[in-house]
Length: 346
Image (cartoon, rainbow, N blue to C red; front, side):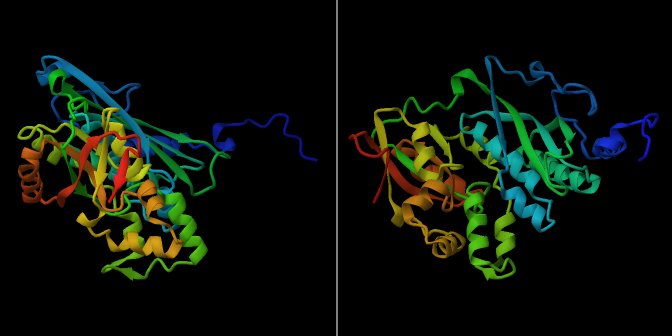
C-alpha cells in the first residue's frame, strides 16, 4: 500500500490545468481587438465594460438575449469541425434581439468542457469573433470552464449572451399588427441551429453517409452550415420600411414562433405553395418519415425570419431584401383570430 499522507495535491491532479486556461486567454487577446465606439478596456478583467453614453441614444432601451447551439455541437465534435459553431452561437442570440429592432452592442460567451483543448477552444472562439464581426458587435468577454467528470473527454458546450439597444419609440412590438397585413419570408441557410436531436436520431437510424452529396453539397456541410446572421439587413430595412413585427424561426419552427409576434386577436395564414422547401429538408423528411406538420413545428423549412408589414409596403420590402442578397417572398397574411390554430396552412 502506498502512503500518500505527505503528497501535495494540486488543481492539476483533479484534471484542471490553470496553465492551459492562461494560454487560451493569451491567444484570445490577440484575436479580439475591440476598437468599436463604447468599448472600454481589454479582455481579462472580471467584467466587460461598455459606455452606452457614447452612442447618442435619447431614450435607449436595452434588449438582451441568451442562447446556445444545442446538439449541433455534437455533429461538430464527432467530425472534428469546430470553425462554424461559434458563428451559430452569435447568430442565435443576435437574431433574437433584432426582431425588436435592437442593434447588437456586445456579446459574451461561455465555453464549458471536461478537459481544455486550447486549439479547439481557440478555433471555436475565433468563430464567435467572426460572428460578432458579421453582426457588427463586439466580443467583450466570456468564461472558460474546465469541469472534469461533467462532460466526455472531447465534449464541450457553448452559451452566448448578447445585449443590444433600440430607441424606445422605435421598438418593434407587434402591437400594431392588423388584419390583411402581409407576411414576408426571409430565406434561411439550411437547418440553422434547431432540431438537431431529431436530425442526429435520423442520421443514426439510417446510418447516413455524411459524405453523400445533396443539392451539390456534402451532407456534413449542410449539417454544419452556420446560422445566417440577419443583423445588418434588418437594421437597414427598418430605416426605410415600418416593420410591424419580426419572428425569428428557431426552436418550435414556423408554427410556434410566428404567434409569439402577433396580438392575441390575430392569426396568420401561410401559403405553402409560395416556396419550395430546400432539398435538404425534403431529404430529411423522407429519411425520417416526418409529416409536414412535424416539419413545420420543428424546423425552419427554409425560412429564417418572417416579417409583418402593411400590404402597401410588401413589394418594396421584398425588393429591398432581394437587392441586398436575401431571398424574400410573400408567404402569407394576417387574419382575425377565428378560434382555430394561430398558424393556418393552405
